[in-house]
Image (cartoon, rainbow, N blue to C red; front, side, top):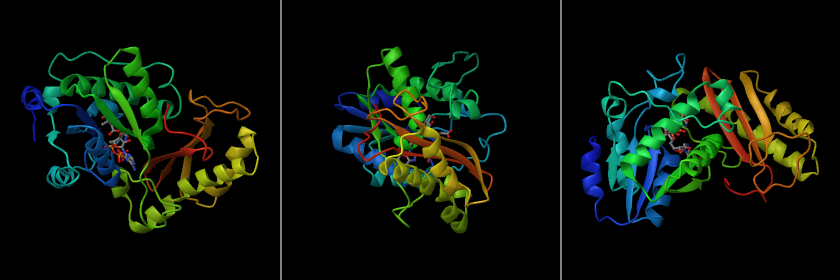
Length: 286
Ligand SMILES: Nc1ncnc2c1ncn2[C@@H]1O[C@H](COP(=O)(O)OP(=O)(O)OP(=O)(O)O)[C@@H](O)[C@H]1O
Ligand SMILES: CC(C)(CO)[C@@H](O)C(=O)[O-]
Ligand code: BAL
């Protein structure tokens, strides 16, 4: 494991193509899938573990965010990671650090509204990590659909020489058809709460079903999901939306290969997010 970027750079010399998986640790099978995708298409795989203070709001869970470096190193090893980079706060944000990367537009809706400053924190740390690791490919999970959109925008706008690979969401094994999206924050929930939290994915599937039945009115599609969400009194909805490839909601659904249903809700004190394609014909992140 490296904490010093210079030592990591030295280790990467002559190692061929580099695949990079940025994470905040407390690794689960979603993360391992990203690592395996990187393993399959790159000579060398780098995983970063860094709980980035800049992307947490003042009332969010930075202090209590789950951490277990020893276990993470084992998961990384078994998924075929070559190097783990776990920088300190002093390395990432030394005294005098004062730059922020703001990705306007795509950051300004959905999670960007509910978590002010979040995507600026994400874009700033990811640009720093990309500059430190200098990978050929970066692997990002579609569970964080808006995050992928924000980072693609940043990488394009700032001419960062890296290919973005979006990886489909990995869900819990129990009740595979309804499963909860794996997330480090699921560790805040007990088994019963996790089962009840599948209401998010059930709501998304209800929207898919309404679309498959021919519904094209956005409000009606959303209502199909809201009807499912209402069955779970402990779900406090933040948003449920159907958006196009620009993350825009329109009154009627137009043909767009990247139409997506996105949901965020607070359950049992935990903010959960999930998303799915609107139809089976909709693709991965543009
Ligand atoms: N279930 C999943 N399937 C695929 N990728 C995932 C999944 N969960 C997380 N990822 C991806 O792993 C990377 C690191 O995410 P992160 O460390 O924040 O984990 P997380 O489980 O999303 O945590 P959190 O609970 O804080 O949202 C991101 O690119 C994220 O999209
Ligand atoms: C991309 C990321 C590692 C930046 O801190 C984080 O937002 C995450 O884990 O999704
Ligand atoms: N998975 C995105 C990181 C965050 O929620 O802060």
